[in-house]
Amino acid sequence: MVTKRPYFMRYLYSDYNKKYQKHVENFNVYCISKYGYDIDELKNCKYQTEETIKSLKDFEMLSPLIDNDSTMNLLCHYMEEQIQEIKAYRKNKFAHYELMMSDTNKEKVSEYIEQLIPYYNRFLQIRAKDVIEQDEIDYAIYGIDINSLKLSMIKNISSNEDDLCNACILLVYSIHPNYKKDFVWDLFGDIIIKNIINNTDGIAHMPIKDENGKIEYLYSKYSFIDLNLKESLEE
Image (cartoon, rainbow, N blue to C red; front, side, top):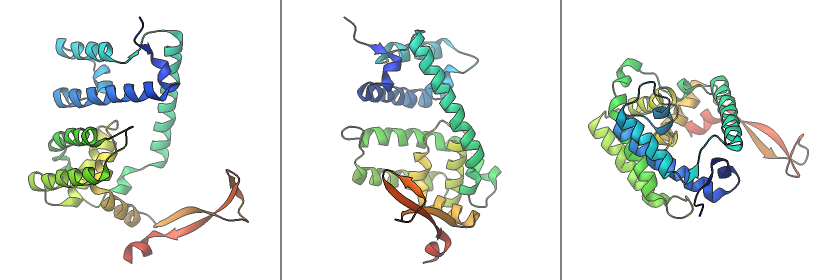
């Protein structure tokens, strides 16, 4: 009796995709804590040990989907690669993580990077623990856990939240770009927004419904307005 479905079916059925994503997330927690790499980074490592090879085999064996070299699976991976290239292009062209950072000595905050790894792993555990049903997070409990994590970082790494924020940004945007960006946003989102406003002209282009607007979307018309975020921040 067949108990597994081909990999490409994760994009046809949401339940398969959720199970696979959960499988990847669990292995990422394990691999990062053991090797310092997530599962994709571990697959791409040039030098493999018996232990890492076993972990990769366990990942495939325990996977809820069969990722073999079938035509549809290969086509699926090709499309994933193309999408990743598009995302990388857009990220490099439009997203500059330096705008999210405050003025600081990068060499100084880079000293915190290795100390942040266990906290990132703890963050993944918190997210997994605080999920209730259908991947929804219990934000009341999650907020308490995240605040506790931040206080531990302040106590054990640095009391300067701006430096911690900068170090977390470097960790997830530069050093390990595959890491979840929620790590820094959930911990220091208010600081990031302040930095973006201070590092730009502070003008956000916002769409609003407008009967005379020139932009049509889902049977409604919209226009863009300029919102001065610096004024909002000062208020």
